[in-house]
Structure formats: structure tokens, C-alpha cells
Image 1 (cartoon, rainbow, N blue to C red):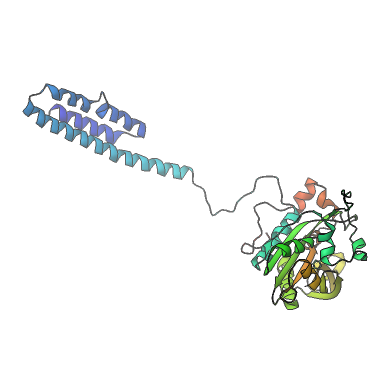
Image 2 (spheres, rainbow, N blue to C red):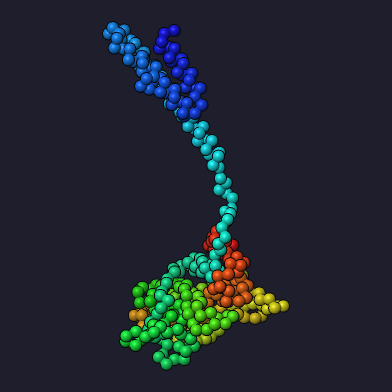
Amino acid sequence: MDAIDKIRERTLAAIVAAADPGQLDAVRVAAIGKKGDVTGLMKTLGSLEPDARRAFGQAVNQLKDDVQSALDARRAVLDSAALDARLMAERIDVTKPARFQGQGRIHPISRTIDELTAIFTEMGFTVAEGPDIETDFYNFKALNFPDDHPARQEHDTFYLPPDAEGSSKVLRTHTSPVQIRTMEKVTPPIRIIVPGRTFRSDHDATHSPMFHQVEGLVIDKKTHMGHLKGCLIDFCRAFFDVDDLPVRFRPSYFPFTEPSAEVDIGCSRDGGGLKIGGGDDWLEILGSGMVHPRVLEYCGVDPNEYQGFAFGMGIERITMLKYGIPDLRPFYDSDLRWLRHYGFLPLQVPTIAEGLNG
Ligand code: PHE
């Protein structure tokens, strides 16, 4: 057996025996590296006669090709074995439910905002926002509150110190100013909800000086009271997760809607506990009405062409009712025990598809 055959035999055996990429590389260097056996044979070519050189050169080239293909084949085998091992080691079961290991909880207010956003966006609403600090124009005047109207006092408004011209900004007493800001900017059709902070100088077990409301506004050419009713009945039933929840519309008054209606949901109060749905009692949960033509005019929307409805509700109130939270004050105490009890796990995100109720 000549030198070429010996090297071939030894090298191919070593390649097959290489157990990992490191060993395989050592075999490669020993064969076709700068000082390798095959390279060594190449170097002897120069000392041969031309005829012998051609035959020997071909044989050495053949050897080099054979070694290279054996190396490539072995590398492919080792790579795929390494990948298999890694996949086995890193295997995770993506079908298992996510397990939350942190301490944090989603505050019930944020949770309710997520839930009502899921319900109203499904109906085609988008979410709008406005500033907490408002001018008298947006908070009152453009909403058709006359200058000396008692409703202004009823709002227990927080006024900021007057500016150089003597006019005071207010902390918005409701989210309704965002109706005005939206109608000024957007050509109807409009379908928005506006969750946000609101402020009134009032503090007891059911009132906080800072609280949250969600406003709704729908403006189009033929939007009528039937749409208002359908939209709010659907919302109440979805939010409280009671399919046959009784919903009642009671005539009311707001300066910026005409006609106006307050909305009650059916409940029972057997044995001290409160149950949403059924029963013969009612709970008021929101204010609503058809947008007053004068409000449309204030915003440059032609009341002969467009009409629509608006509604507003207290987020704390519907949260307390849905989750049986008895007192409003701890909402803002940042007491971890309360948050752990009433808060929600961050991975339970409410969506219409996944369900609103965790
Ligand atoms: N802004 C009213 C309030 O704070 C609620 C409301 C909004 C009523 C929109 C009618 C229409 O009480």
C-alpha cells in the first residue's frame, strides 16, 4: 500500500471516529492543514519527474477531494446531532398556560378601563383623550352650561389661580369636554370613548376628589335614541356578564343633551348582599342623551346634517359593583394587601375573544 492509500485510510477512519466538531477540526488540520499529511504530499510534487508528477498530482488531488467530502459529510452529521441535543435540552411546552411569578397586580381601575375598551372597540369605537386641566369653555360653556347655571355649582369645581387676564382654568369635572375637542377636530362620523381622570371637591365613602369617568360620543347623519339604547344595553350586559340584565332608561337632565336619560341596571339586595341582574331593585350607573344641537353648533358641526348621542359613567362605581368592592377610598391608598386582594394578574388581559372575566 503506498503512502497515499495509507493516509487516505487513516484520515477517513479518523473522520468517522471524530465525536464532536473540535475533534473533527483536529483531523482536518492534521490532513489538509498547512502542515498536514496531504499538504505534505503536495509539497513533494516539485521533486518528481514531469510524467510521474502528473499522475501523483492527480492522485493527491483526488485524496484531498475525498478527505474534504468526508469532512463535510461528518460535519453535517455532527451539526444535526448537536441541534437535536440542543432542541431536547431547551424544550418548552408552549401549550402550557403562562405562569406569572411577580408580585405586581393590575389595579381594578385599569382593569375596568381595559374591559370597557375591549367591549367598545369591538363595537367600532376608538379611544380618545383630553387634558385634565381645562378651560371654562370646554368644561362648561361649549357644553351649554349657561354662565349662572346651578349645574356649575353642582360640579364642585376645583379652580386654578386666575391668569393675567383674570380667567381661571379648572380641573375637568367630567370627561365631556373631550366631546367638544373631538367634534372641533374631526368631521363625523365620530365614534369615540374617552376614559380618564376627573375632579370634584367632594370626599366620603362613595366620592373621591379625583375619580375616573368614561365618556362616549357617536355622531353621524341618522344616529338616534334607538342606537343609544342598543349600544348601552349591549355594553351593560357584556360588562356585567349577565345576558338578560334588565336595563332601564329614566328621563333626566343634562345641559349638553336633549333628551337626556339616566340608565339603571336591575339588581337584588337579598340578605344584605347585592346581586347584579334579576331582583326588583335598580342601580343608577350612567348618564346619557342625544347631543344638544347647541353643542354641535359650538363645535362647528351642522345640527341640520348631523346628530348623535353621548354618555358618561363613573369607572369606580361600575368597578365596585362588578367586583363587589365596598369602599371607594382604598382605591387610592396603594395598600399592597388591598391590591393583592382586588387586583388582577397581569397576564389575564381582557379581550372579547379571550373573555372579559379572567
Ligand atoms: N358628564 C355627565 C356627568 O359627569 C355625564 C354625561 C355624559 C351625561 C354624556 C350625558 C351625556 O355627570
